[in-house]
Length: 99
Image (cartoon, rainbow, N blue to C red; front, side, top):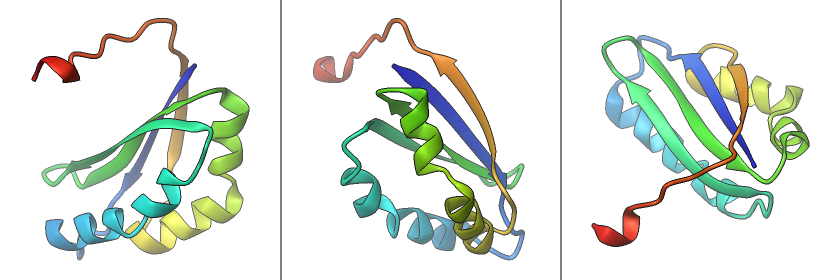
């Protein structure tokens, strides 16, 4: 599996509520992608950085989902083009059932 970290600078005119509303508007589309295992939305109001951490079946699927058209939409939604990092994910600990 592959972990992808996507980051972008958020337009300073967008408040937290609007950023979260825009995140929520994308959730259905991500839930319908069969190659996406999991996604976490990221937001740091202090630094003005947003993004996501994605767990994918493979790197090609991550790159296909975040093509030039997607980058254009992200720039329109949040105010800047995203950056991408990819990591092999050989092990996962999931304690969610314990909480």
